[in-house]
Length: 74
Image (cartoon, rainbow, N blue to C red; front, side, top):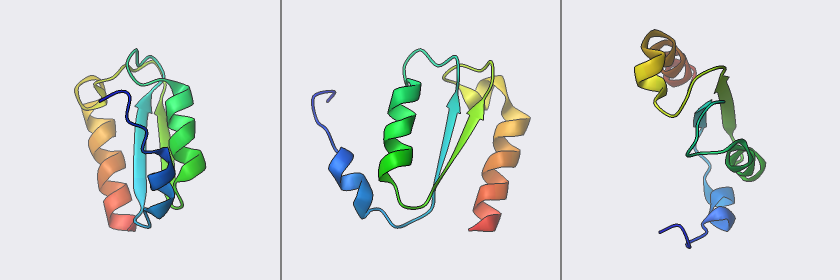
C-alpha cells in the first residue's frame, strides 16, 4: 500500500478538502501534508499544535468545532 503514489490524482479532486494534522504526528509527516496542500485545488490545512495522530481523541471539542465549521461553510 505504501508503494502506491496517488499524488497526480489529487489535482482531479474538485470538492473542498479539510486537512487536519497534529504537529506531533509520528505517522503522517508535515511534508506529506504539504503534498496535499500543493496538489489539491480547494483545501484547508488546520495544524493542531502539540497534538499527535489522534486529533479526535486528543482535542475532541476543537476537532468537532473545526469539522462542523468546515461543513457549514461548504
